[in-house]
Image (cartoon, rainbow, N blue to C red; front, top):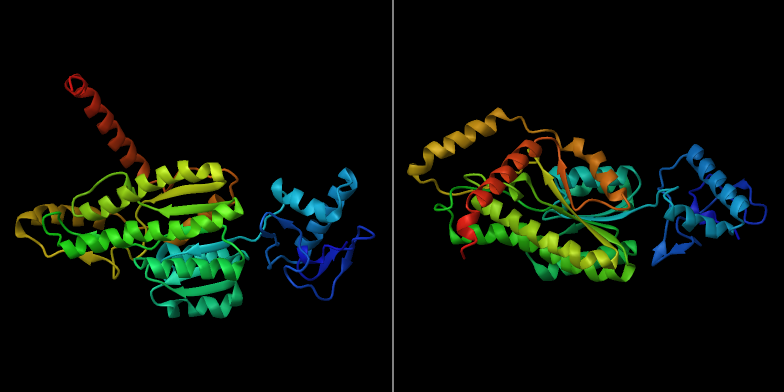
Amino acid sequence: MPVDALLQPCQVLDGDAGEPRELVTAESGDSAPTVGHKPYLTRPQAGPARLKELSEKIVACHRSSRVSLPGCWPAMLRRGMVEAMKTWFITGASRGFGRTWATAALKRGDRVAATARQPETLQDLAETYGDRLLPIALDVTDRVQVFAAVDRAAEAFDGLDVVVNNAGYGLFGMIEETTEEQARAQIETNLFGPLWVTQAALPIMRTQGSGHLVQVSSIGGIAAFPTLGLYNASKWALEGMSEALAQEVGPLGIKTTILEPGPYGTDWAGASAAHTAPIAAYEPIRQARRAGATARAPRDPSVTAEVVLSLVDLPEPPLRLFLGSYPYPITESVYQQRLATWHQWRELAETA
């Protein structure tokens, strides 16, 4: 039985002779062995050398174990000997991290459902990568719209492997300055948005028995900073929800990772940010925060691309992962201070 569809056009295996042969046409996905709910395909940019290598690996598996040729392919996938194409659903893909990770996934041959409030911002990617990109207009605060978008992506790509909850923005201002409308909008986008996407994706992943939820938090989800109180609240809530989620869905074969980036040039503090009306009494604190931010040069988000690709390829990804070195000293200091305070007041606490 030929396994033509396992490898892209150039070289495949002849199922009778068990030797590589030339193939004039092969449609990606035709007759591919199925593991679980869908066919596993090699990434389409693989060149002749890579195809020859894959052919030789399958032949070696067949000869050494006497497993059938189509049986060797899923066995190799399970053992991590070859990489399968992944399907992604990424929110907030018009710029920043979302754009960076969508582009990186597409470049390596994966398929991406990329959402944005204005999907025309993804037109250049659509022109470059064709039907491997599915642009979707999405406001993550609209639960009905979210479920429709996730279902559309899963139907188009026959499932979802990686869901990245990236859409979000920063609200800058003191707690006292924050209006009800601003507070609700911050929580709606940064917490309820990921909640709706997660709820929409889970039935699909449960059916598959696999999947990876990547929740984009922040160093502001671990430590709190003046002028960012509501943003901190949204990310702390996301972290708590995601940690509980990991315990709920882990036994079902679904992985969860909370990404905690330091400062990157993602437009988080730029055009997408919201600001409160300032109260003069807080101006010294505001100026101190501005001075500290000015002293830090945000890194280019493109340096995170390979890290995230490596993360989603791990068979057992971590629950939490920092991006960059910036969060480490802050987090260590914060946790040391918390432990010191708890221990200092333990005697009083235990009288309760």
